[in-house]
Length: 228
Image (cartoon, rainbow, N blue to C red):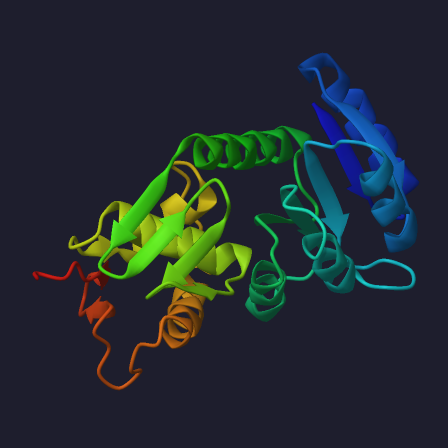
């Protein structure tokens, strides 16, 4: 596994390089966004670890630029505890985030979970719920034949709901599905309402009387499967 670490903390780079090596992972380290984009263009990486606080372009801007060119999994590294910053990162296409300080063992676990989720997506075919068609390997969704532009988080949310279309999913189950494992992350739960609202809008749903993604009071959400 080849990891691209984008962080100006050289001590962290040395720590992760030492810890990852016995686990079959090599760390390619750069300290800012420009070199990161260049490395991604020149070499194949399995995952990007991207710090929010960077010299020059911050991690959010670098994430946006990477997503404009690649679907490589991105984990944001942030010392910020504000849920808003995490939502911004997920909206820009990050696959997960890890707050600093973190245990390298936890980080490796998060990386593996993201890679498992990515591999699963690549082996799936299409999901269809009414006129919503999701091409999971291509990371694309259409409504009535029209392509819908979704963030990485919104796409994963739609896939999670589509896999269990017609069934009410609890907020906890959705949060676990979005994290790609059994771990429940309350901050993902707290951001669900925002992302569901964005997803409804992009699917052409009426926010006041949604017909596609309905709220099940006291439970969570359901992607409605048309009866005819």
